[in-house]
Image (cartoon, rainbow, N blue to C red; front, side):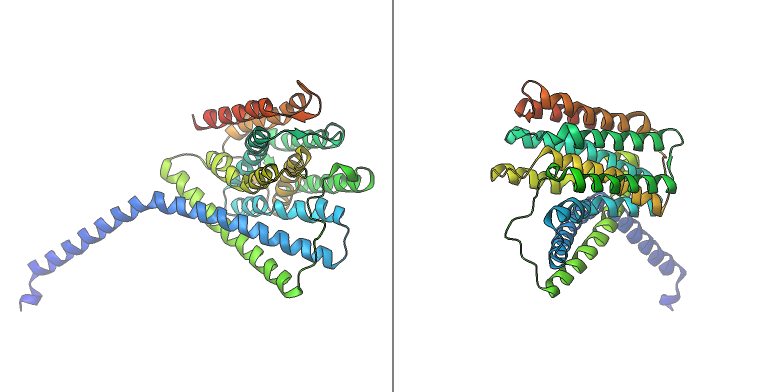
Length: 344
């Protein structure tokens, strides 16, 4: 009889409501930590996935007896751009185009301001003649092509993506025929093909890592943007872009510490060219990219153009065809200013 008492039912419902309310408050408090965890795990999976995909791609290319110079200029370049590509495609398809654009624009700024800045602080880089005859002009042309396509109609359309990818292949053909020395071979001379089962395993792990990493990274980034009330664009040009530039930074720092000469300015500029023409080009072919946050066009894209141009005088001043610690200070200072004004 007491079990059917209306008062007891009311009390039980009240307790259930309070428990659910307390649980909701607890879960909301965990959201920032959860979003940060998603971002960290996503970045780790992207880095690991890119590494595994690179090992599989190089092993497969060696098994097919493709010349190493072609591997370095095509397979390696595409594999190392895979994290940016997967994140941009995933973000654009999920309805977050500012994350896709901010990822690439921010990565290009981070490659030159953060990665190159830290690298030349640790050790001087001698610059090849191909820097001002091939790499830098092509990077600026790709940057202005991207600027022209996006600035006036605020959209990267599918036919524009096709043009960007065609320009990339034209650039690769030109390098293969006339400027092979413009690309530094980063593959060790004692490379041997992996067993077929390892190649397939790394290929599968790489694809799985890139897919899982992009899912977690986009989820964490969007959640963090919502939690702190900032735009997708800010998350894209800061956290996401720095994260996807970590492999280049790690490789550059390790190369300097080991006193290896393989690292060059041309490699970072080549990464920027691939980010613009391959990553955004392929993403636009799959789905048009619309600009939502106008700050991408009124601020971020000009920072990208500015720091890209800045590298040219730094290479020649005060001593020709080299970058030293003073240049590193300048580049890092510009990058810090970019982050400061972005977060204002």
